[in-house]
Length: 516
Image 1 (cartoon, rainbow, N blue to C red):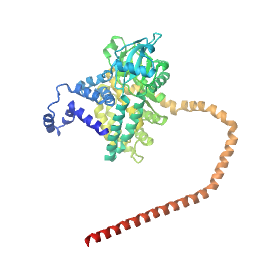
Image 2 (image 1 turned 45 degrees about the vertical axis):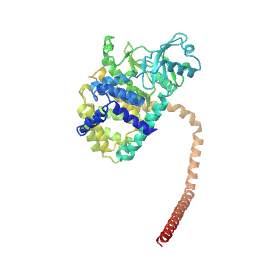
Image 3 (image 1 turned 90 degrees about the vertical axis):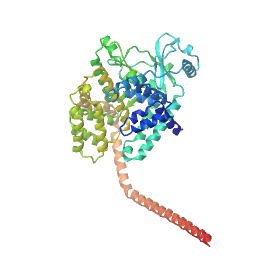
Image 4 (image 1 turned 120 degrees about the vertical axis):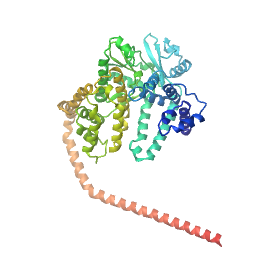
């Protein structure tokens, strides 16, 4: 099945003329005319951006998501391609209302008309995995209804199997690909994709993010109507806002886009470092802005999580970077295990400084991120930087955040916006506030355990004495086991040698017979 899917991907690539992106290289240009003659039947008069968008739509949801991410990086891809890929955010061709009605009827085991007093047949948004319709509950409350695409699980399963196969091949080709942990990256992506295929999991993500931002001071999260949620259907509060990509419309409503950009940075860092739970699919199609200038989050299928260790080393790297303390950046990479332990800190420090120093004190519009990323990748290969699969979603989200910031305010100083937050967070983690908070959290457990301290101390001392007495016996048993294992190995080798000699003797006898 995977090989057929691979052939289909190659077919789609050739059908929509995407080979021009590869053959445009100077060394491959001679092949263009040959392929053009062999594939004379295809129509490549459509603009390249539209052909790329159509090809990604034909290949399915995973490829659509790849296009969504690319659409936010106008500094890395030409404008004509970015404009076309932006249509993938909420303009994927919808499936029919008849299928929507059938899915809802099966999910609730009753007709759609009994669950909703009114239901718009035309979807308001159609994405790669699901589409959204506006409706009203029986008591008249306006809601948004998200419905999973039919047979989407099978399609995604096939693509994930293919990605895993390709990752396995890459991993076996060279040590460099193996260091990048491609199969673990695919597994991480597959784990996050599972949330999108079960809308009750997405509803849970939505509820948790809503609790984290319950004050709604900067971010508004819709309420979930749990009685109307199933695996294939999610019903939530209907939100009213302007698409964040419509900058002119936001300005017309007297919304300060510069403040909006700064708020977006703070919201992101709050999710990552305060909560360790962040929206990992923040392309413009999933974000709206209320008339009062607050963010509205939508689509909670892909959420990222970070543990305390990840958060600490990330914050330490960011803060050291903002302070231009490249020595601590290098040391943090070594301490966290992101680079081999024998890495020379001075060399890593020099490499990081050469990459990062030129981009300081520059607005986003003046920074060549393509050149910066290329330099970082070259440094990663040189020093054996180990890609952390649990950070893949964070890296993807950072790309989205930077793209949104560039659209809202090209003069945004990302460093100045993030530094106060990270400085405060690090102070809370390693300063006196951290000691006080930890002591306050542990105090109830300490008080509860104090009456048991004498008994626990006695048990500990008793176990220690017993362990010391058991050490010689344990050592003797381990030596006996090792001797038995060695004896078994030699017995197996002897049996193999006897079998081989017997086979050789048989072959000699047979050969002698035929010679005579």
